[in-house]
Each structure stands twice: as structure tokens, then as C-alpha cells.
Image (tube, rainbow, N blue to C red; front, side, top):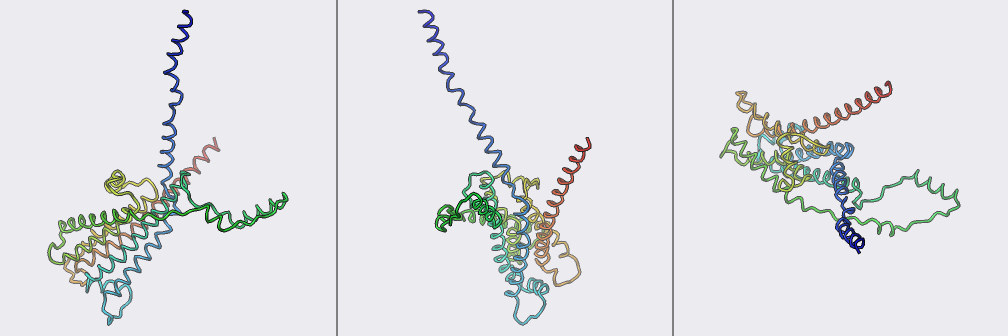
Length: 326
């Protein structure tokens, strides 16, 4: 009876240790999180081709704002027309330009957001995106291979292909928080502008319209692409405090924003000078400085990203040559 008791006690002692082999589950979660964090970096070819379209759309909206706000009797060229309409009637010009530039920035941010979501879904393998197109040559090779094997070509029904891929409706719920973030940023910019010397009561509407234009240029794409600050505080704090980016998408959003703020601030330098020029009227130089700073920041972001890509390629070639020589 003693050995039977030992066997039963050994089985009882081994029974609580039985479910332990099923414990290595957190490894899969860690691998999925690393894949998702690494897949959020959009390639260079999906971000920067949109920047010329954005710049052209902003210029077009400014020209249209100048034509709408200026009187029909004035016959001047397009650059002078924009500056003259901004000097003569800054309120109407800023109202129309804010509406036009706002639409451009919302379109730009929405396009980047859709590309980011599509890239994340295709990168992790969890999305139900559309199938890759094989092209004419690959399809011809498949037909030739089937003919060599004696298979007859089968015609695919269009209804079957449409039923396979179901497109999800686009969710525009992010536009509400993006608008709130833009309005909050415009109030902050307005307060900072008044503290730096902008008129408090006189031309207050022009000051706020300038602040709204600056926030639309700098903050609206960020608020559209990224999650709201209350959901992703770390990314907003990292971008706006340390000015560091982790991927091409954040680079394309950060540099134009910094250029907009810097250009608007530097645009106020010639206002107190005694040159007695009509373009020194508030807020002409600040508006032009913000627009020029946005364009310069966009171009500088492209140059920085291309320079880093060249440095990485040259470094890889040097390391390859060193390994080959050794």
C-alpha cells in the first residue's frame, strides 16, 4: 500500500504543474506589437509626391482669394494682385484664403491618413485590402504556362471579383477632433501674437484670422493624420517639444509646421521699421512670412530625408566594401 500512496501523491503533486506548458503566450503579443510599431513608417514614395500637389493647391487658393477679394477694376499681375489685395482689404482676403487653404490641408491630411491606414493593414497582414494587380506580362506568363500544361483558360466573372473585395466605408469621425484642435491652436497663437506685440483691439479680426491661417497651415495636417492629443499625448509632446520624428510621415508634418511658425515670427521684423512702405501694414508681412515659411519647411523636409537616405546608402556601401576587403 505504501508505493500506491506514493504514486497517488506524485500524481497529485504533478497535477498543479500540468497547465504550465501553455504559458508561453505573451511572446506572440510582443511580436505583434513590434510588427505594428515598425510598420507605421510610410515609404518615401508615398509621402513626398503629395507635397507638390499641396503647394500648387495652396497657391491656387491664394490666387482665387485675391481675385475674389480685390475689386474688378484693378488690373495687375497675379503675384502683385495677391499682395495688393492683402494690403487693401486683409479681412476679406484672409477669410477667403482661410477657407481655401483649410480645404487643401484637410484633403492633404485625409490623404496621408488613408495611406497610413492602408500601409498599416497591408504591413501587418491584418487588413482586408485589395489584391495586388499582376500586370499584363505576369498574366501572359500564367496563360502561357497553363497552355504548356494543357489547361484551358477560364474566364473570370466580374461579379465574383467584386464580391471578393468589399471596400469599407471611409470613417470621417476624425475631422471633428481635428477641427477642435485647430481652433484651440488658433486661440493659443492669437494670445501669443498679442503678447509679442500684435494689436489687441484695433485690427483684432485680422490678428485672429492670421492666427487661424497659421494654425491651419501648421496644426491641421497633424490633427488629421495623428490621433487627438488626449489619446496620443506622447507623439504630440515629442513633436512639439523636442522636434524629433520617427518616420517619414512625422517628418512631412513637422518641418512645414516649424517653418510656418518661424516665418510668421520673422515676418513681423520689418513692421516697426521707418520705411513707410504699404506692405508694412499689419498683418501683411506675417501672412507672407507664414506662407513662405511653410513652403521652405516643406522643401527642407524633403532635402533632410533625401540626405539621410543617401547617408544610409553610402554607409551600407562602405561597410560592404570593408567586409569584402577583409
